[in-house]
Length: 245
Image (cartoon, rainbow, N blue to C red):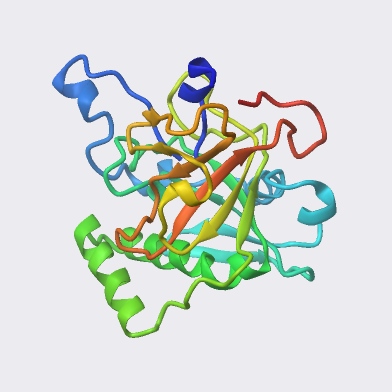
């Protein structure tokens, strides 16, 4: 697998930042949440348009679109095909990602109907709690408790999402984008899919040379009982060729 490409992989629902350990400052480039306005997109129509770039127009044009408000995501456009498109922010990274609070992150994603019903609620809850000022540990505990009380739905079979936008900003790493699909499963051994492993600093452990699949570190039972597998598409949502592994 081409390591140059691997280092530039943008990793989805939730995207990993590659970084160099040079000084104490660079080890923690985003130690806390920035002012809220740095995460916002001032032009609501621009956010809607960016969200739709996550998937081919045949999917995104009839999707529901949500945009980030001051207290969480809000419906901007009602859909009719069951898909939901939105622009995720960096806090959908693993909680220990060095880019968890990166205000530059803009991650367009379109979730299919099963994912909209059972994965989207995680995004909405995590965002709402963080914008309310809750700490990472408080958010993790709230999500864990919500699953125990069955306030968050169990993962539905067939859940997946599109992240094929050429206009995304997924990480501060050099080539900060990759057109890809994400597949959601119960927590499992990555060997079941022949997938290579990625950690929260974007380092890849190649267990299966030549495999196009990666198991991402978002969720993985910490606390959400979900695994996310990623595969590059080699094509942007507009149909033009994209870099691939």
